[in-house]
Length: 225
Image 1: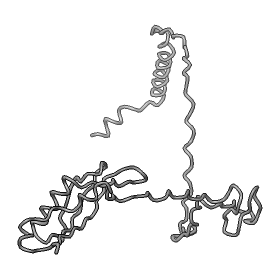
Image 2: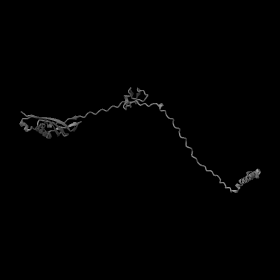
Image 3: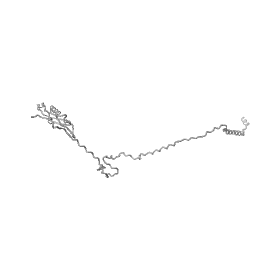
Image 4: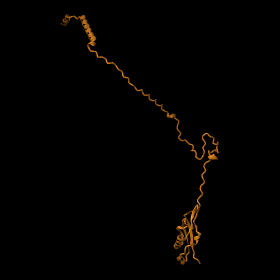
């Protein structure tokens, strides 16, 4: 039954080729006519702008090669330094013969200048000690040194001795008195009263100038037979 349908229509190869050719002509005509159909957009003129570009930075320095610590010389730990030069001794410069002669003197083996103006400074002489003179007894008042014998000690028949230190002022008078030794209070009281009222001395001096000074006095109380 199918064989009869196909057999009634025949395939025409020439008609197919003609149809394909017509379609190709139409497509080509459309492609050539398309630029004329669409309005053309005018092109804007090209303007260029110059840009000032800063110079490129210099390349970074190359890192130093690592140092080999094993090849570095070791630093000495115990360094003996020469002693500092003495200000009072001439020290010749390095490389100069220490025996050369200077004007007015020569340098010895120890670096000191012998003679001339380059000699070591000499200490000035020390001033002499001051001349001190102790207070003396004024001969005009020598008869007033012995105190009056205490009546109670005389009646008791007692004798004694008194040792006292007196401070003599610049005017020769007694400014203070201290007891060193006394046989009794009566002997000491008689001595103190006599010293304050009647004793006179020549003042002590220091290089000829009157000064206050201490003097020790010894008095003896003795009964007359």
